[in-house]
Image (cartoon, rainbow, N blue to C red; front, side, top):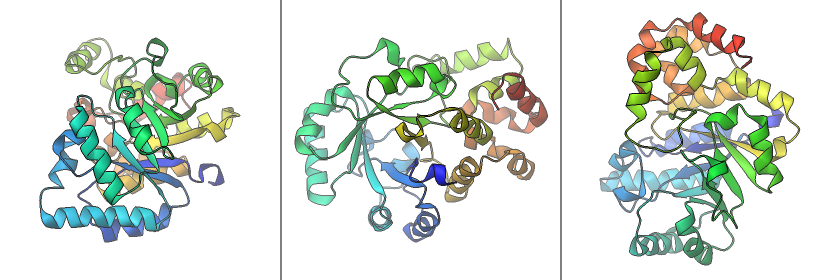
Length: 300
């Protein structure tokens, strides 16, 4: 697993007890580059309700600081998320003041409109841009100064698109287990409609096979590229408990078949694809049908 040394970045779940998290990080820190998290200064700074709900009481805040401390003590990068749209200048200033007083971010993932002010406040941090649900080739304005770009979806399957970004001087973080359709170009209320429409055309196993990215697929990806030094791998883990996080990280590290996990608990399908609409169908899935679709499409 040497090829994965310091390659993964994980999202923080604020509800995990910090002592348990410390044990987890000690076990996997050789493979974790950073942990990304939102600041505990208001719900508007996070896109995850479960994360905000873990930051209500004094005890929860104390646990959050314990989580941050164990990230630092395990020599991992602290990646602050400032990529929620709609924050006004006062909110940005409040976030900057909090960080200047409480913690210095090693990395900041942010949208372009926040970049200049954050860069002025933290000139030595590394800056990451997340395309989220935007098509990169159609939205190139304002990317000057960013060190890395987070992409997922179709970029998981397109070597040409990855190389295009690398040739432009960017390093890439591939989001492996996102909850978005590979074809979506923006996040809106059409998501449920698209799911239902696709289901009227394709069977559910084909849909899941297309939208998920399994450890065997990552193993194939890294074997065929010559630019692994330009890649890191981002995992969507902010809403996952510690057991699910360990399954997610370990399975990708090992390049495992997910079958052994599914045999134990069919609900674990969500670990490798965060699109929540699939959850109602997990129990009905034919695992071998899903795997055969991936094989037929040369996914691994």
